[in-house]
Image (tube, rainbow, N blue to C red):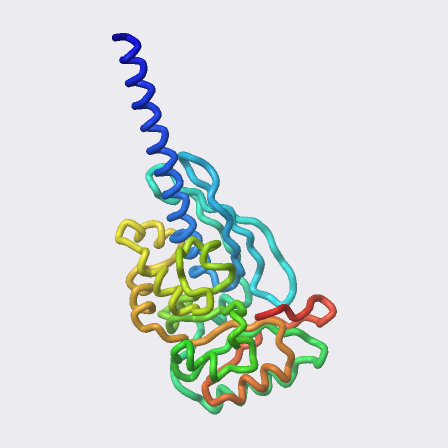
Length: 278
């Protein structure tokens, strides 16, 4: 009888262990998909690569962080979630020159010849041997296929290069909603998403969000309602480009779909090189 009791206890403990491991794995996957991508959305000033969460009870999501720049500046940040699923540590991202431009973002507000002329003067002052990082504001929001067609050959062709898109206008004192296709769908925890469509990825991600995520999103500086509105809209209001020459930017500015280009940073070409994408 005692033997049977021992066996029953072992089976029960084994079942609990399997349940705990399975639950921890699901928590880690959801943290990667929801919190990891939310951190990216909240900080367009940085290129953030996600790594698998670590831990069993409290989870730590490591982030590899590089400033949105034609230069080079990288480091590591962590996000920590307690066993109840609440964020206890959120990363600290210093403001950059891009932060001010994002809060002044006017993508989607229609063409303005005076604004475009001022941008032309600013771009014209760039040296010929410089790489530029720039914020491109569209005159009117575009569906992604139309944007890809309009912006050839400036980095948005069918090769699936990384895209840094703004999926909403800016609100009062806030930055526009941002989405980056950096990394594959699997690396972002978005099972079966479209690796080549930023809009579809963003909409799939918003579809994962529940009311239980509101508090964590708020801690990261995001509003669930704003995210859902942007996903329902499904248009692009602007984008970031890196490693652009003066001629590249003037070519972009000449397109009727572009309202304004803000040069965020310019570095000598000797400090870096144009990548496979922007």
